[in-house]
Amino acid sequence: MGPARRLSVVDEIFLRTHRRLGTPIALQGLWRTADRVDPELLRRVHATLRVGPLGRRVIRPRVPGARRGWRPNTRAHPLEFTDRAIATGDLLEWADEQGANLDPEFGPGWRLSTAALADGGSIVSLTCSHALADGRALVLAVDDALGGPSLTTPSARVSGSFAKAPAPAANCPGTGRTVAAAPGRSDTGEPMTSTAGAADRSDANAAPARESGESTSDWSDAWRQWSIVARGTVRALRRGIPPRPTRAVPDREYALSTGGKIAHSVVLQCPAGDWESVAQAQGGTANSLFIALIAKMLWASGFPGATIDASLPVDTRDEPRVDNDLAMTELTIERADTPGTIREKARIAYERRMSSPGGMPEELLQVIPDRWAHALSRGAGERDMLCSNIGTVPDSLRALGPHRCTGVAARAIHPGLTANCLPRTRLSGYLCRIADTYTLAIVSLDPAHIDTPATLRTLAHETTTAFALPVTLW
Image 1 (tube, helix red, strand yellow):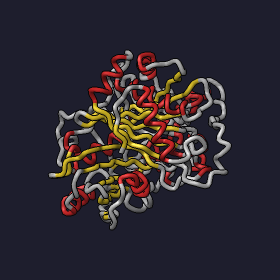
Image 2 (cartoon, one colour):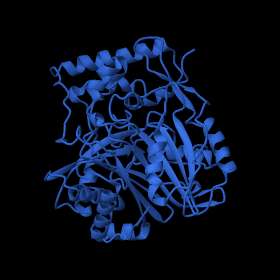
Image 3 (cartoon, one colour):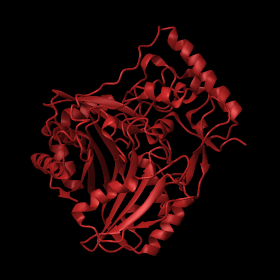
Image 4 (cartoon, rainbow, N blue to C red):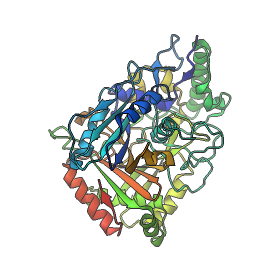
């Protein structure tokens, strides 16, 4: 019996990072409450997540060339309670540790955990392997577990999805490592990497992108994959032999010498009215202000370039679903750029995707050995910085039962990151809005210039002050 669903090219890119073929990536949602969260409430949420869309694992096909499949998996890491109350200043360090031992193939790929805070509140973390879901998908999975309508109401649509918008105000989470948008979609989508993939999709259009969710036998799926690869490769070779993919390797002389922690994080909150009024005063949008802010922080940290290349993940969903449903675009930012000029650059950028070299079919990555696929896709979608706008978070996430949330954040973390796995990306930002608050999570992967969390906090404070943004740091 064939698998119920098949992995996409993007899913498999993130599956390879889980195997240390690339930068390890996990996604994390964080909730802060003013009081202690009822353990029994969290046990019910944990039980619901086990049988929800995150409760699945990867299985290997029996036929060469067939895509890996998804199977339900109700095994889960136990709900974890930290014994001691942690200081609020150590909150993100605790959260960074929640990404260990996630295994989307042979074990549970997600974890729910909580700790009491010394200020009397609680912190709750849901972490999952990026192979299971992108950032928006994680939000949808939580909304579903909390009884929200996102996955059950046919009319529900993902806020922050820009599949039809020519000039989106937000783009969806990712990590700078994704491929093409679904064929037949209008000019929106999430990061298309510089991997081998997705050029002329006329053959693929005969089998819609959503076919990855259909039940097919391994034999028929392998036939489909090899057919697409063969026809796409012949078509690409008519234009000549594609150049060998190259990875832009930044000047990271510190990479092998640093002995301390590589990644550092900060989370800040800002009233939505203030954020949007500052953006409008400079001719921008909430999204272009976000991009400008991360760029100014990167330059303030000592980034030497005259320009910054930014990768922007874009949500490609036409309906709510828990998947890696994204593509990537990019833009180049100059020091003189403002939220207003970035708004226009972003409008143009959202109308195109990063494309694969030589027009080779992206399905090629699914029929060759993993190490070959990694060599072709290594560094795909990576730029100097990443700006992932997750959009508006459902109202169901504003509280955990009777416990009002004082803060909600979403971000990517990098469990087990070592110096030899550093990406080109030096600074990543993850923006979401809940009710009347914007929350911005910032992750630095540049220990030469940002060597401690305190350094990153200072940078965030100084940059937001320069923009006249009244922010509160977690």
